[in-house]
Image (cartoon, rainbow, N blue to C red; front, side, top):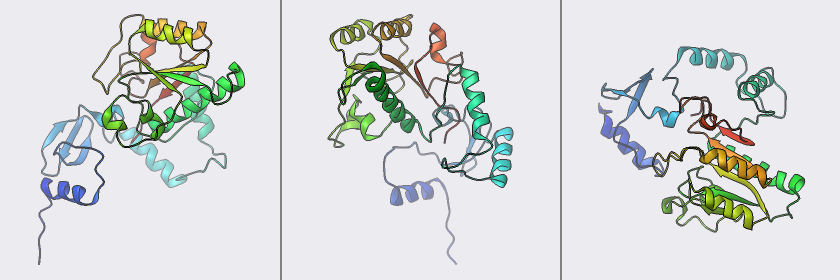
Length: 264
């Protein structure tokens, strides 16, 4: 009888053999988690400081979340948006009241949320602002990370995100992050700007915290030029910077907020 030692090397080789390589993981194989801790397949214990890119800041296997998942899965596993259900409206009322927004559109992933925000921004530009069809442009910041879809990688400045994925989606203007003069210049020169998409703190290019007042000034310029201020708080929202939202530090409200609650 053959006995297979399913150690760290075994699982890494299995993923390398059968999985497409879009990441370069550290050589640690997670097996179970509890609270702030993770154990690998050999039983070694770690602090999980990454927390799935902040997706499990509440801790692994939080009992209240596990209980809610089990109760709902035993009652109704999935409901298509082709129908109403007894939970969605309750959630939508709670989350809009909590953050002070008019409407919420739940999505599956961060990239899908960013893509949807781009679509809403463009639709507003054509139907409300009066920009000519297919001429709307959105300002973004160099060093951004908003996702990995084709449209999003079109305005990435990271060669690893862009190389060999073209042709790219047009309609985006890149400026330097934390440069209020650059934003003002584009807004003054271009009447087809629909929105300014920005991360309150950049993560992909390092932990880039903007100068005091940058976000507030950017919001003011957007209001003066009838441009939507779109805040991508997937990484910074839900008290990850000490306030409920990172933009709360400067007392501003986004026209469109992209937020991550609990995602996998």
